[in-house]
Image 1: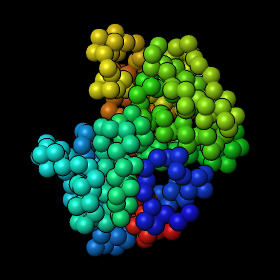
Image 2 (image 1 turned 30 degrees about the horizontal axis):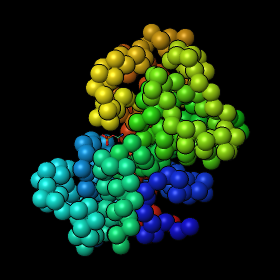
Image 3 (image 1 turned 180 degrees about the horizontal axis):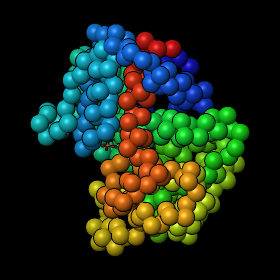
Image 4 (image 1 turned 120 degrees about the vertical axis):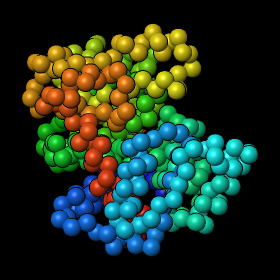
Length: 311
Ligand code: CP
């Protein structure tokens, strides 16, 4: 399916071939010695962020500007007409007249899908509630494929461990869906009550993915090629007391990695809070800042594809 004009709402909307198209486009962009500043010249991207963001918003803005495009946006819903009661659908009907592509983050599951149903210009979901974060998934896959090319050719199954808040963490939901296209073993380790929702386990089962639960982080570290940490999503916890109770229970330190295989890499969509001690940054295993850096070529690729200037 062509990318031109396409919405990017859920990773489930993308085939294995689509995912490879994005990864290959990002690789080509990253390998260029000179930036393609003419690619989307004259095009405008709007960022509508109804929830806080550092990486997603700024890396989309950087990506658009590196392609020669321009950016308008809001990062504070309280300063917009949403505050007066304007609906999301009406907001989108306005913004589509100002911009060629819209990146939206919203606290409500399904908000990006709703936006896509009323928009003539491509909508890119920058995260909707606890649901999906597809551009993060493309950059996570790109990062894993750079570290372990075997992800793409299937020559050796990778073991990927997801740790932390697997219930509310939208990045692990999207990533699990995408990994169903590849040959991986999945190890899950989560506090009680924050396990991976059944619908995602069913997706993995449907493709015959080898999924197991680890009793603790140390056990997951011993098995994994990639340890994908997530933060506890405090803002999505219905009960603050429950949050306080378990927030200290999922944390890795450099000491815990001292016997890990050298090739183990720790990823995290960021921001981290308690779950990765600062001393991990100095180890060979820390890869989360490089992962965030991969957001630029991947988001350049996505923008170029949906704006129809890359094929
Ligand atoms: N990874 C990610 O979504 O980060 P931000 O919340 O800072 O955008």
